[in-house]
Length: 83
Image (cartoon, rainbow, N blue to C red; front, side, top):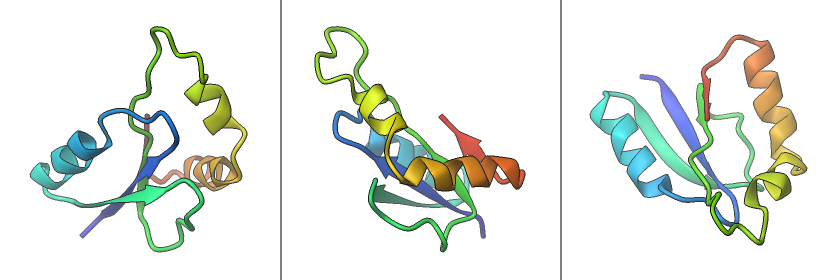
């Protein structure tokens, strides 16, 4: 069975709902903190964040985290990446 990592960053929104939706679609899902390793996963989902009045700039912070290099590698390899 395909197993997805739902990456949780500071300011992430709807990560629980995303995990639930993946499971309802028939795959495995696990919420993982953004400092986790993705080696045990077949795909990655980056759930939503806050955009209106986002003074913390969650997306800008997330884009500069080390885990995003792993996410880019997933995409280069043709593995599922949703965001």
